[in-house]
Length: 440
Image 1 (cartoon, rainbow, N blue to C red):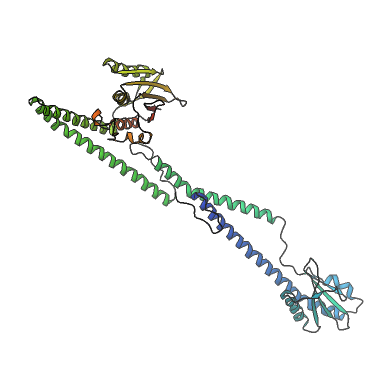
Image 2: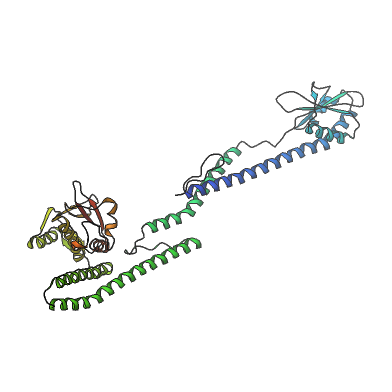
């Protein structure tokens, strides 16, 4: 697995593709939403500023002209009517302030001067305080001081419900991002699950080809790949079966000729080698049949009678096979395949330990678990899985000198898959091997 990509800030990307796509989409959409909000804010600010300056330019000239023509005693009655939301008129010198050299003050001063046509000298001062406040001082024609108290407003007021709308929008943004990521990642999860469960030897359901065109195309490609793998495996087994079958006739002829030869050490060696080759061919045919042996139908069997009959068959020829635990009841399975599986397990136990024990029990899920146990050398833990591969033999105790061809466990695994069960090998505490088959 590749390491997470380091970010400039020292953080790291999430390890899952789902988290990465979610984070990228969420950040991108949040930035786009923030940019839209910033543009809207700037537009509102510029609109408010244009309205304020337009009001100053259009209304102030008329208001000053009216106040200049009125007698001083009547001017106070019109002050409230001439005032606006961002400025008001005050008769008198106003409040003491400091000269304003800001660009906003120069812009306001320029608008007022343009409005009154440079008839009255004007002076802009900033009033100290928490509120941004400017005062424009001028003198009317009769020498009366007049102050224009301006309170610039940067942006239009925000409604009280707007923050709640923002929270709802962000929640919808997160929800939609999560849903989009889920829709995009779910086909990958299904494809990964199908790849993990891929077993060409089992007839499992095909991957669904529904969904967007890209997903459907990937699903079709996966199903086609699965069919090709199954076809290649079938061809391999067919080739093995054909070779094994064709070898039987010449081996039989060679065996007959060897039997007719004069007694000699070379004859004994030849007969022994021919016997090994014949067993290998027979196991090859059995393996091929186990891979494609779907002809047997399932039937209901009595567990106690079935297991006892297998044990009695071995006991009749003097083999140490005992039943240590037996569950009463019936099972629905393929009896000949199950007998072949258990016979392979018992033969291995007798070969490497001299004795075998059979245990039958029910699991917590009500499955039937049949275990064949021995006290032989066992199999190293790191080779348990490989031991079920075709033609696998350990280099020491489990070699060809013991009569094994390396196909017994492979045949058992194939047959277990055909009856819908599962096979597990594990070493016993205190030594020995246990071969466990679970029938559902």
